[in-house]
Image (tube, rainbow over all chains, first blue to last red; front, side, top):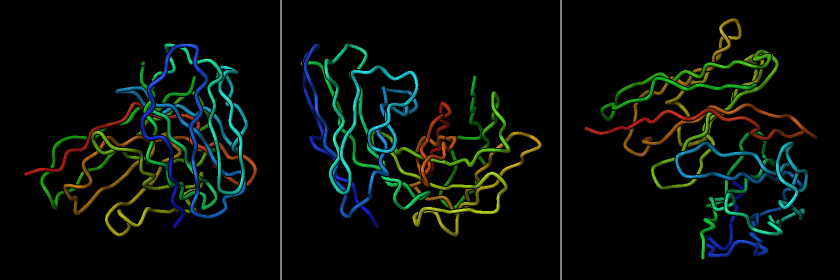
Length: 108
Length: 121
């Protein structure tokens, strides 16, 4: 089974900061990776799919990159509404899509 | 507007059964594959099961295989998850999620609000 490791698991940042979250796969997954944002008590929201394609309606400050085993989610200028937990999900073994452990982004 | 509304969660004893439902609206339900994803309290996300648009293809996570059954009724725009032989570790919020198929893969484009299943004596 493909394992995903997210780092860091916790991140403290200020409004306006540039934030980068990494997701590493235990084996190559091409570009079959998605990023989701989840706020407390809410369902996850798809941000990016196919590693770098921005979902419709998602602000352009979010971007994704990578292929193979290493991927990043970048928020270019952190906004108050971006404080949340972020998950990566691999779909190389679609439809069995395993998730990373999550990265919680909190206000410094 | 796409809407997915789960129901059927609740408290059940270990070894018991529960059937979750997901009512879909705002899109042509019969054209989309669907998934169940769960999240234990304070934990991360776990994909549980997948069903294709025509029900011809079904997959389960190893953790629920043989105990859970996914199904759908396209005439009723509804998705189901029959959960049997429930264990404490099945305690979680269960989400239904619509598949967005792109470039030989699928991504979870729309999610319901979730329904809480608690397995406890």
